[in-house]
Length: 562
Image (tube, rainbow, N blue to C red; front, side, top):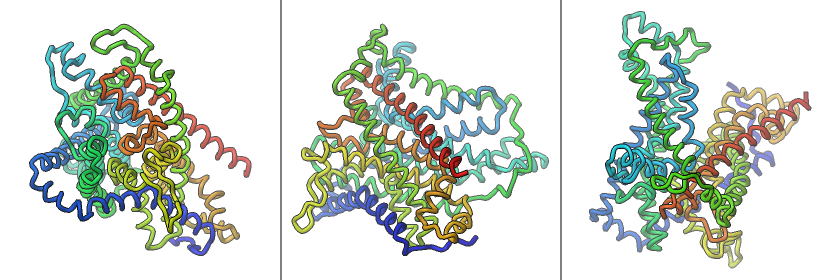
């Protein structure tokens, strides 16, 4: 395949490159440099000796690794189970099961944790109300359950696509040779799915060790590095310790992220050479029912958790007084803090979403079409927003932007975090939203651009169009689905983000996720449920609006040109 001529000298390409490099540098690289500088400062070096000799710190490190391994294993297993049911079993209700599996993607990350406490805690409706036992959900078992159910859609969607793409002819050949279903699954399907299993496992491991909100809600005495770093900043005002914990947390996160990318690059198995030559033979024997029953039980648990969130918003006191009330919704929607939180979060997410979407598209366009050896570096730097734990990035913002940045005695960037924060900290929150959401748009746009033959754009440049004109008039309409996906995911991630934002919220700016965390921490579960319900509703309505506006506007322009 011949690539179109690269026009590095074009002013538009240079401007686009400069803009995205500045965004990534300010939003991600510079805060990380501050974390590393603080963690490796002379005053911090003796603390590492204390860390490796402290039984408490070593236990925290062990807790973090164990949690990541268990969540990676359980979340990937649940995703594989749901994908197998969807693609290989002849059972009813697949569409409903699919929609249930996607519920955690549109809710705040600790909605499941709050509902789990209400249902399965010491005085939970299920554990105490039905079985009469005071089960302690706080700790490792509660965290594994909550995080696995919250993050498994990542593995489910990836494995679902891979299982649908497998050529059924190979399974038919194995069946014709006398292999049973179990042997086919073990010796044929699983090896082909190896990249699809390893990649989400590593991703879930990273998400689990980096998560902050859930350990604060259901962690109990089970302390992990993310929550310990958070407490070092907010409770002890010890930024040096927080930077040390962040560096220790950053090493496995970045390392495993690089391993994941290398695995996907080197271990991809190609099984599609065109239209599949056979049809999938769905399992119809009695053996399908135990597998389907397990998936249904997990789906019922998910429904019960989100049903609790919805019902809890309108119940006076969950597990105590089940009479209906609108007080919680009134506090969340009409109270001064609630109304401000809903408005501020929606506004800041609405500002950050198109920036993140456009930046992701621009980076993908530069990496795929216009950069040579530097493409890999830009791609890696742009994906740091998701590879770096949100807690680490939040602490980096505190270290980097709490004071004005001056060059030669001139303030070039006002302090974004702290009492004198610019616009009440809003600019820092928008910047964090953008860099945390940008990788989603980058990945989807990169995949879409790889499917467009370079000769399509080459024809435009041969006719005299400049690269930016070609991108706007030719490339962008062709990758509209990628733009829509990137915008949708970016908005949902902005609205539900907490691990980075919790460090940046000031008295002048209210964020819904911060309000939920505060309400749950104080035991006001009704108010927390009300916030979760409002947040999920806003996300759903906004996703529909994005689909309508983005799809309609580009389609209208295309029809006008035709």
